[in-house]
Image (cartoon, rainbow, N blue to C red):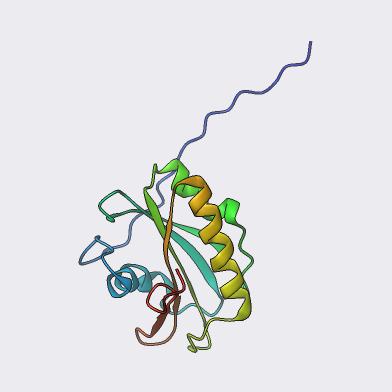
Length: 146
């Protein structure tokens, strides 16, 4: 008889990020929560911020660490922490080490895909932020693309 392994899935807390306000009401407050994670990075990094029903941040997960110009991101890794945290919604973000917050064609395609997957899972994507230098950022929601 073949033995099928049984698993327990759990979250492991890796510390915390100090923020003034954990309520992600809009793109600016979302930027304020996420931007400390990107300070001084020389490579692209992509994160998921899970939100509760009141849009309070309940957890942040680093999905991918890439190179100077690209980070490989798959919806499976974006939504895995959101599912484990019982999130009501997500905001994602990544940095452009160049400081230029203009989203690439790949950023647009990924956002569209994440929006679709989030809708199917019942965990909507509220925004995708591209963070640059000195607090600069670009918001897909603010541009009417979500």
